[in-house]
Length: 488
Ligand SMILES: [Zn+2]
Image 1 (cartoon, rainbow, N blue to C red):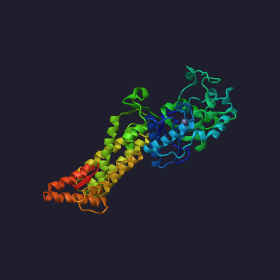
Image 2 (cartoon, rainbow, N blue to C red):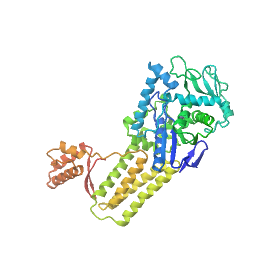
Image 3 (spheres, rainbow, N blue to C red):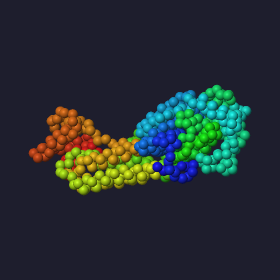
Image 4 (cartoon, rainbow, N blue to C red):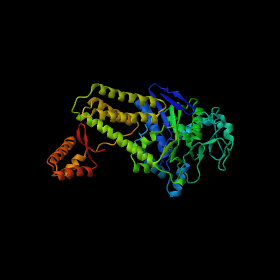
């Protein structure tokens, strides 16, 4: 497996620190608002990366923080006349809910900054003792960037370039404009915790470094986030961790590309700003994931409602193929052609291999999705050619292949609406006599009743049955292997 390391700008052969195990950390949100679909792209990308590592046999430990104390939270709380803790709790809960709605797996560890103050203070003390940090007269503690000879290793920045335009703000008490706050002295009315430097709160970069160290141990295998986090956030996390503990911080750095809306940067002022919750009110998580994964995680992703609609249609088409494969497998009436069955079974194996090859090459989801689409076409061709003589094993294996590969992407196919034929019997009591609860049997009874009505030229009854089905979103379809009721 090869992964692009954004710190070295190269694809590298992935070698976990501990054989068979992967420890990864992805920076979580600052919980002051609903997350937007640009954030969602990052979290969905790393969810798929994690799922693929698991599918590849690794035991993955995945940690993600919640930044629940920050200027943005405090400002939002002041605007709304609430406490910072109330704002943070509301948006932490909303974040967790919407991630689950998007079918993103829960992290193994989800530390919250406000519950990790002790380990952060310990790290800051270590940095001060070693001459990498200093407490200023105003109660802030700063990291001395020039004390770290490797500063710039994550983002490729160099100190001289950074000096251009760097300045010390009015409320700061730094020795050098490049230095950043590890600890911020409390202003009146702000949430704060006691520390050796007085009441205050941790800086944002400090929390991730301390949590990675506490929950995963350093160095870790993969550290990820949006590309906007590479500098200064990841650079500063890395500087603190490597200076405090004298070992690497993360072997691989991964950053996701930007999300554009209709080719433009998403912004509230342009009116093209969408939260994840808004999108999921109108479309399935599966369609959103399908849209996103058609672009690989490092490239800019173009979101549009048309593309999302298109993804929804693609999903329905794939689900229809899976349903057709299963139906053909269970209703074949003639003997399958052996050579054609074998060739079709080989296609499934080839698709799995192509999918794996793409995913092992820096999680090329676009290529892997291409393999899935290609296979859908092949399945449709096979079904057409096989007619009522589909090979049961090969058709079922093909259906499973499609479902499993999409499951690796966290994409669940729409299920056929199994309750509908029974619902129809309730609605259409009198049209069809059936009192059992077996869906296939019910469907067969309905079709049988319709066929009998047609044979007896009782068109009113035949049409009534068809119309009742239609009202329930079902269609009658004649296939080579017989007539069936379809829900997709
Ligand atoms: Zn972070």
